[in-house]
Image 1 (cartoon, each protein chain N blue to C red):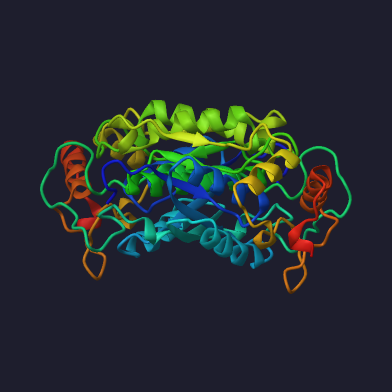
Image 2 (tube, chains in turn yellow, orange):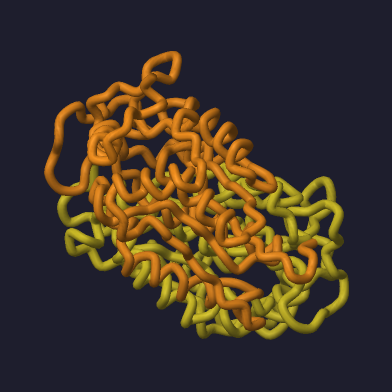
Length: 226
Length: 226
């Protein structure tokens, strides 16, 4: 049970650069952070290992992994081994889009928040240097916030849930700069959609390219590549 | 891949009386029905067996069970064995409320619908003879429909998702009458929150009471009790 006066947040944590920064920002804002990751059949488990390391280093109060057994849905290169992760830029919403992923993630986060007595959810989505996923847009996040208040017992009883997306309007370089100031160890993070067997990034997928561009703009080496 | 002209729906199916009727209504409306159940740590598995039987008897095109490993959330008498299912009527939103359950269920259904090329979701919620859960209210369902269009690639590309709740404004007796006309075999369904080891309903929980009242009003015996 929460102690009166505690500011509690559920923080979605993928193990990537963005969510690591989002966690640091939530901590900086004074929240006790309950980090939440998902094992949803993504093609590699290295990101869950990265998430655990980031949660520890980033001062999360606890870190939980929700297991979602819904591989029958298919349809994304991130969960369907029959589909390849693109190694060159594509146009439109890419095949790495996972249908309704952020809606599922935020829904589980909402349920946990309600039980914890939290009204704040943090998600590291970004609408600037991003892959064009529809569920990373500001209008989507605003709609989820409205839904959360209608969906829950807490909402009926007066809680106003907030979906914080502190990276939403930052470039990747701005995210990295902000995170470095907050002491984020980006060496622990993994952004790649298709790392090799030991978890080394491929360097050519969309996520790797956006990350490399960000570090280049900041003018520092990516510690995960050293 | 869907065949042109197919009307495809994802139908949430719990194994209870309401969702069995919702499936029959979706079939009657001409939809090819992809039934979806959830193994979310509910205290008994009899309802998943009932759901499979209902899907077969109800003419579902297929039936899938998504496994949600998020028991760490706790907080509901339906998933937390440390909490008891009330055996007498309570006031307010009862302890059987599962935090954000319908939001999680609809989110997964939405992801599957997108991959199937479906734009119709059926959910058997009811705002008359129900347990007072916030995520069974019309305003909640309307908000989810709006969210679905923002959340998805299909929505961005012009699909208008619809959340059908054909039982929303029916009494339990009206639901039973409608289902009997459509040939629903209520003997296969299980509504009870706390059945015994062999899946027999307890007769005293909220769900059992609402069901008994419905059959009494229709003036027929509940075939599941014969």
